[in-house]
Image (tube, rainbow, N blue to C red; front, top):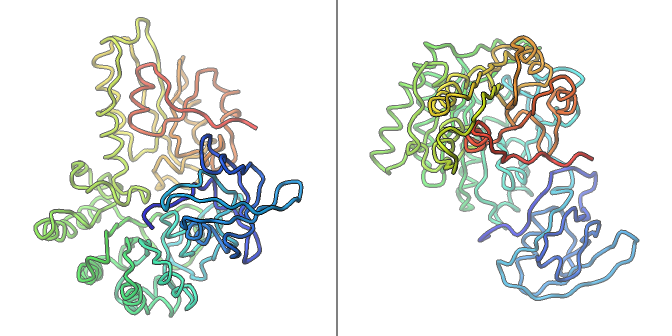
Length: 462
């Protein structure tokens, strides 16, 4: 596909294998509006073909001549025929992307979903291993749940790139980590993808004494041989929460261990950069934080191919901060302003440095960085995106002071909602603290908010 034709508002599930694509949004001036589609309409078929998921819909809509079978909200049905350019977008969002999410049947020793608190919302407990979500959203799949029919569809539609969770290229080690004999077939499964011309990004969740050391050397070496089908390799440290109940021994990296991993991987990075002029292998930001080292420069990340996996997210945040150009006087605050910035403990030193740059030019600006210890998941979980409303509230109360604005990480909120992982809402927080509370989603927004402008738009409250 030259480009995807559809925007997706969510990946909610239904329980049938053929779904009715219900429209949740129609863009102004779009093809959808032109042919008379409205919110609530269902697309039942395209060119006489039933639709299994958003992938079917996308490929059928790639035709220049299209006939849609539509069911309106009142139950009336009609057929709409229209002509379009091959790459012309429909300009609509849909409630559902797939019929039913393919759940993971593995029992991985490092599975983070198995480490969340009990009795949390069901959506947080979904362990997907769905090749369709891998193609559409970049979700990582293990390939162990891939059926022959799925592979045929990947080949027929050339669903590329996919995102594959490797963990180890040693079959025995991988089977032990995923706790299924199907995991030992990784070499053959990758061969099958490559024979279909599929490219794929890869990931390794690195666990001390399991797939590190010599096993990591072997995994990297084997994946390097599979270029150009392998597009990138992300290596992230295993995370362990206080809610883990699995008896399998699992530890986390400390400073010494992180330094060792960085040194080990750097030799391969130097090799690939000498061969191709790119890094190819990227370490999670946490390794550098643990080791107390500076993050690599922006050029090292080659355009951030795995930023949705958190790779290079901090470096990107810093670059966005410095690239943000704001037309304000040298001193944007004529009166003293106090701003509290909430963040995870790992990124706190970075936030301190960025805030100091702004305060240096704005003597009336008083910014205090408040690292939040994650009591909900455990103190070793130190990223901003997993902070809960309850822990943020406790920290703000602990460091209570007069404040004009509170900046919180937008990643801590559920996508498209004003609710944290523990179901505390922004409205709940605002009832406790009179200051303006603003979620910040990027480095540019962070700089703008420090300087008194507002860029983040809160989702509408229903």
